[in-house]
Amino acid sequence: DWTMDAYREEAVRKIREQVGESKVICALSGGVDSSVTAALLHEAIGEQLTCVFVDHGLLRLNEADEVVAMFRDHMNLSVIHAQEQDLFLGELEGVSDPETKRKIIGKLFIDVFQKYADQIEDATFLAQGTLYPDVIESVSFSGGPSVTIKSHHNVGGLPEKMGLKLVEPLRELFKDEVRALGHELGLPASFIGRHPFPGPGLAIRCPGEITREKLDILRKADAVYIDQIRKHGLYDEIWQAFVAILPVRTVGVMGDGRTYDYACALRAVTSVDGMTADYYPFSHEFLGETATRIINEVKGINRCTYDITSKPPGTIEWE
Ligand code: XMP
Image (cartoon, rainbow, N blue to C red; front, side, top):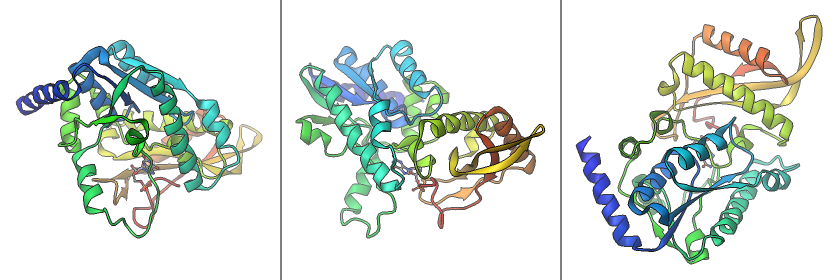
């Protein structure tokens, strides 16, 4: 639309003015905010931008390849694909506490990003997809909430540590405006409309200890679940949907044999901002069909449950 078109031109002009001939680095996650930031920066300064995509081994099925291919091949951005799965999964071995998982992942993310950023000679700016609500929140909550339920990680503190200046071209926008801008910049609708995905990724959808085996099973089950949701035309009605693999094996029967495999929980919620949420009222037909597909198609899972907890008292993620 015309307002976003005008915003885009103005944003491009401002970025050029701020950055000049300098080089900029950007942590690309594949989420809407970092994707739109990268696309906008690319339009403004082209080759002066390098993106770092950190693959921590906790992404969904084919996600890393899809994100890298889209930005590198389709949009022509310079993207470093940091393959650090072994590092992250190694450090997470034997860890089951949710906050410890977050701390380990958050710290490694910063180390890894810094390692790759250091290879980009004379980078002066770090681009971040900070939105207007983030700006207000950090001001009005400066006293800090008294109870931390979950510590979210971002690259806060990194710019000072690395001696970088910040470029934050989305600072004046709300989420729906960021989506409109992404559309304006030619990002595919499927990308712009994606459900939010947490920084620690599948680590917090694998309650208890994380193993490569569980992650592989989880990725397959999640892909079937999302496929079902898309096929039934429900994806855009839902704020977030995912599978969690439970740290328990249960007995089942398949053909004429006994199975002893993992149980999983399906989660789907509606929400406006993630602060409160209601479970999505799927039909029993949908749930039955989905459970059957997951159990038939995913080796390692023999039982499916549907999580009907709203937030509060639950949280959206299991950890
Ligand atoms: P909860 O589980 O707290 O989630 O109800 C609210 C929203 O935040 C996301 N989430 C995270 N995002 N790092 C993130 O970047 C985190 O550690 C994290 N924990 C939860 C969650 O996916 C939901 O959108």
